[in-house]
Length: 351
Image (cartoon, rainbow, N blue to C red; front, side):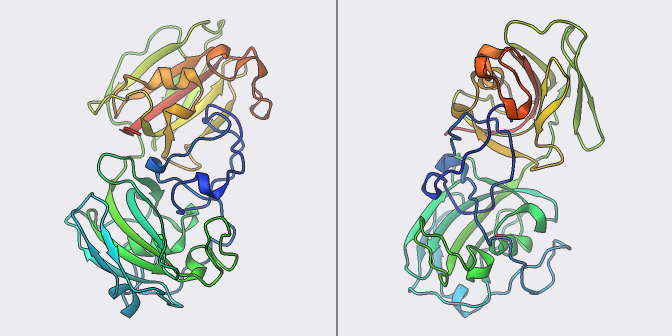
């Protein structure tokens, strides 16, 4: 991404406990990384990759999903779709095997393995009864997760979503092994034996690539070739880099315009103009990711504001609007390097 390495943030600064933070050297975000409640962001945790127990066969073939039980059925959830629900339960909830109950079936298609899914959450410590956090409702950006065992998402969430339809709401009471694991989490006041309650809205499927109408490339910009899955490969012109911020639209989407400070769901690849080397990308790694434009290098935000969802955009960023005179040594970027991003804009929501 367009910036420095992700620091070891305190747990309190993140929004919702969902998945382990990818082990990535470079980040589009400025230091410190800004992760807002609206992004329903991620959490680096030991022990959250525990293997799911063998429950009933999932509609998403390579995953398992969990049965309902007395514990999950005892959770009372009311409220309209796409709004934070009212959740009532008698503490402590205690189960050694993760249970999940369907609150609302959902009228959309069944989720499938490999889908990139947008979720809204309300999360509780089911042992103490304390609400831990909530987000992703209404027009706010929900959590973007890939429905796959190796995605780093808590097994309890995968189990709850795996057999759902789009539009569903489910209540999942997670055994410790399927969430925070034996270590618990001191900062979040989660004990080693605490169960966690996730109330999950399966908001919709997020596309993995831009789908806008092809536009005529501009002279002087890097050329972009796309693989079958949409992965871009940039070729840098044999010319001096522009000294000003430059943008080019390769695909024009018909979605909403990106506004200043929005949280944008995107795929991107970043290249150093002088070497042509990729220093970071989501393609083939994390997949679509959500980033607040309030926490990125200036040129990246300026290049995306005003663009439309569904577009693919090339942004050429001079040093003063990128990493500045200090560069980014981990990425091989010097203080005089221009950097280039190709960005697929997949969604955008106000912070």
